[in-house]
Length: 139
Image 1 (cartoon, rainbow, N blue to C red):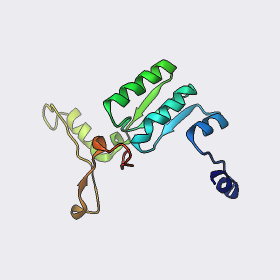
Image 2 (image 1 turned 120 degrees about the vertical axis):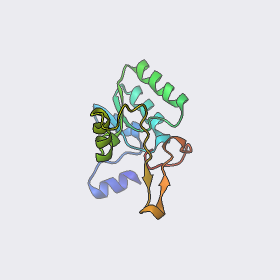
Image 3 (image 1 turned 45 degrees about the vertical axis):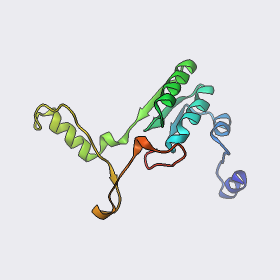
């Protein structure tokens, strides 16, 4: 079905990551998928000896994260972790306030990311408590 639809649209389509990597010469795999899929995709990239950039969270468990690191080292590939939050205006402002000493001698900074539509729709995002198969907002 993927190939039929891609032919109709005039684009390349792939059934999976491994098929895409084999068909296309790529230099980097950029992972922006649900967190529960990260390990499998990184393992495919490592098998093909292709560097990886993975959006947060890199894994859904410490064990998976450690195994990802070991697999990347074993394959001699680089695995980069990214977080776009560091460029948000609120985070940049907080960093500047800490850097300039405006907040005093900061020992700890904690952030809470929320979603919803206004205060009535408030709900904290559980980035690090996502069930294995759930497609979370950040993972």
